[in-house]
Length: 317
Image 1 (cartoon, rainbow, N blue to C red):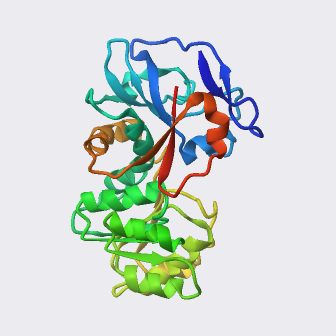
Image 2 (cartoon, one colour):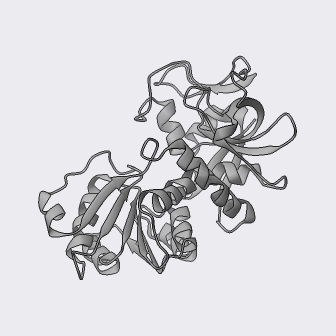
């Protein structure tokens, strides 16, 4: 069958042929793949930089997808760690890592939105136990995951949602998606503006890390009306850098909890339990999704194709 195949971490995946996977246990089934999202997580896996990478080649990229089962059912699934990826004509699915979708679901929309949407959904539902009435700062709100995070925080009952990012034009879109306030991270006074807007939030969902987080963390903490009020800073992505310098006084001067949300910090069963509710929001159109379908045969071009912030490429076999 045809698939996207990584032969070297220094080269782009290419359209190639591999053997059709075979079910190994009663819990597994081989599905016809209808759509698989080209997420940042997929890119980092394909170039060997993701923290879960074991360096094994060749490999098929793709961490999730929408497929058709032999009995005609429509499923969203998360690939098993020991199975080939999802960017192929057919994929191996562990039924325990999949959910059934309504027959009229748009496979491309679900494939585009579930992975980025899951990042904030799981962070707020499983890592911090977010409660309606709380307030949220989305740091890095202009990207696909950040835009969904703004919508998800609002859906989960946030009383106030602030979106922060660099591009003023794209922040206008974040505003239209339901943010109460948007803050540009450009300019020497960005920290002051962020502190005034988000000083008293309850949760920060951070897709940036690196230098922007160093500046934002200090600004937000020093602007809090009551520094003993708990603040959960959830590290989800590292678009601006993999490390930060964290001054020790920030941990003493405020009630700050820094934690991560990602593969390994939540059990697979815990993640799968959250999928039906999120998929329902996507399928019903409650969440705005900007998806662009590209044929799997064009995977090399798709890998380098520029997209607007918030848009997610989806490969379609």
